[in-house]
Length: 533
Image 1 (tube, one colour):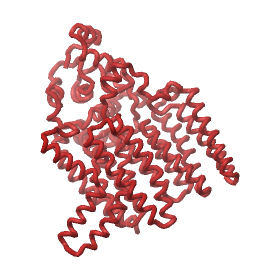
Image 2: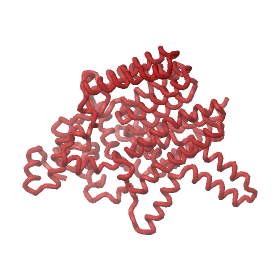
Image 3: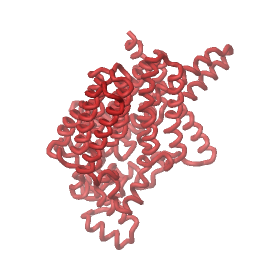
Image 4: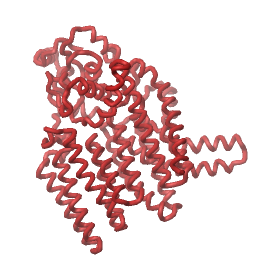
């Protein structure tokens, strides 16, 4: 009955948020404008697969003379293809793709709202779970990753992490552990960026078992399913490339680490009645085994997938990819928008822990154990902000309920209305801070942190790039951020985009546009390009 009472709020909140987003992004939908270059490239990946490119092959063969490997996973292509394939005979290819680029992101938003509502319900009362749907729709980092036309993998990362956390704070059964492990296996397969939050959730499950031995079934179900699920999904998505050892995606080396961890946790669980020091010793041996495994198989990767970039590529490209930089490298307004809600969520969680019953307090501790590392990860890599914001929502709802109780006690109707509005603003500070910052920028004449299409230099605007379709199909030498739009909306080939596996192509493009005319001509002629954009 409780779940049935929660669903109307989830569906109602989602329909309202979807209506607002559809109205706000109607121009982008009708003009088929991509929010980001990665969304254009993702659509092209799906289009090529449906057009006959091998499931195992995620390379982009219209770049760099056909040799342009990508590190992306086919898992994210599946929901897009599930909409495009049946809709194409009815609507035509373009409208079918447009439909998928609207439906799939909004479905990830629905999944996020539903999962956060269920998590909040397990932590508090029904009213808080109903209100959390509203706060979710007011979080810019979350909505940014799930708005219409946004089809990159970041939204799915948030959904899968929330699914694992929902099961983590539930009854510690084997079945729930299996479910959490399956969600995490999908998460690290979708994107290797999910590894830190996966490690955090597994670590919290292990620490919870050290405190309460009855949590062993959940812990073992999680780690063994993570191991087995990673094997199955890696085989399903990489096929003939199963044994490759990339530094930027799931590989047999990391699967072996999951296996070693599973064995160590099983051994520690078997010694459940042994002293804590013995169990900690077994875990330490397992951790050492993981490090040795990584050192043996992918030692060069321990410094990160970007460590081998040459100085020119690192300086002119990597260090200017804002979404991959830490919070202190961001525009202050965007940094505040990303970190405001997690800050409130952490405070709300601590207050809830103080007042909760013992059973509920344990669940809050589990959530807090994941929320803290998620916030740290978001501070180190800003694009992880959506997951950190989503995990902070229950704590934010706890703050909202405290403030609403005080607002309802105000006798004066006007003052009560002001207090209620203040409660909403305080519990969802990201949106409020964004409005204040935008107003301040308007007053001093400063542009927003995230540029609109009107801020884009001429010849880099979507309509300018698409006008190149009038040229006969050929190879066009274009800047990195122009290329995805170019290859997704025309029949042309190009040299390279902002994808780190192809550092040589990135180097050639940067060297061309910062070099002398003679140096540029040499590189362009060697590339086989017929035009320069």
